[in-house]
Amino acid sequence: MSDDEIMVMIFSVIAGIAGAFFTSTSRLPGVYTRHNPGIGLMRLAVVISVVWTWYVIQYHGDPSIKGVYVAFYLVMAYGITKICGQVFTGVYGVNLRVDVYERKNLAAALFVAAFTLATGIVFGGSLWGEADPLSDAEGGWWIPAGFFLMGWISLVVATALYLWREPGPFSRQIRRDLDKAQGWSVAVYVLSVSTLLLQGVAGDFWGWRHGILGMGTIAIMLVGHEAIAFAGRNAPLTIFMRLIEQGMYVGLAVLAWIINRTIDQWYLGG
Image 1 (cartoon, rainbow, N blue to C red):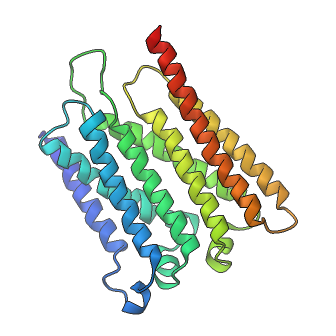
Image 2 (image 1 turned 120 degrees about the horizontal axis):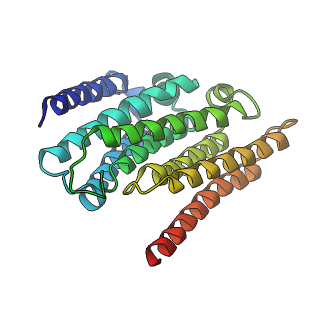
Image 3 (image 1 turned 90 degrees about the vertical axis):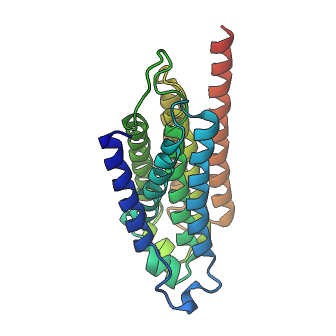
């Protein structure tokens, strides 16, 4: 490993330790940890993120990623998922310790777990494909790191835009009203957005089509969310309306995947 890779490895270890410390449940009284599904969701999101990264490396990553570099990227995945996923959600007004751990707020847990997993999905996707498919040159850690940052910043902005246009303050709905339907809606939206961003950061880099289609689909999602918010301007949204909203996000994400795969087949066939 080069000097800069060693430094990145050390920084990733520190980020992972810091993230584990800030999100630890070991210092909490047993009354908070017993019968608290939110804690399980937090752990599951991190585990799936790291396993997803390992899967991408093993089956879809650059051939140069082997040996110690597998551990290198898995450590990066853990540190990024903890800091950029779990810890960062505090920016949106959800307190992991107070809301998820102490109050056992499932609505808040759904959002934090979804954003954590979405962060892991984007990072794993940034390792998909060859860094330079047109030559035999090996890439470096800065290539997936750069694609991850672009994808993650897009995730942060897309989430902020969604929450900004909710019919009512997000923190009130999640923290005071314990609105699980709203928690499910934002969780489905965030995960759907992450699959679209995955298409933009994953694969051998041949052009910007996947990213453009993904961003366009996210824009359509936000327009649909605006329509849902408009429908609930005078009264709280019903569970039925939330289910329609969630189905719209999943449907648009699947449609974007189908369109991308179809265009890829046409391109390869030609």
